Amino acid sequence: MAVRLNEDKELVAAVKEGLKRTGGYCPCRLQRTEENKCICSEFRAQIDDPNFEGYCHCMLYYKSKD
Image (cartoon, rainbow, N blue to C red):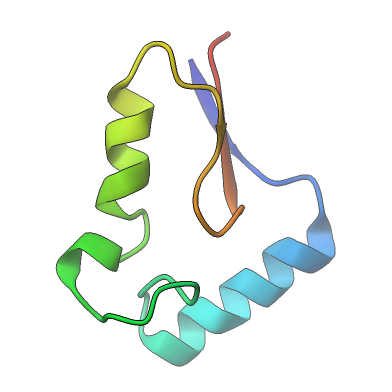
């Protein structure tokens, strides 16, 4: 299992700028709750799922099964 940044550098830059604006909360979410603090609880659960492979909600991170 490996977690990496998205290969799209423009998307990564845009999401990181959004994280700066929101104080570390996912810029794709409206609510500013601990569950939405990057890395969000949704993606942490997906990381823990051995069958999950894919991007987090805002597409900043990608989890591969390898």
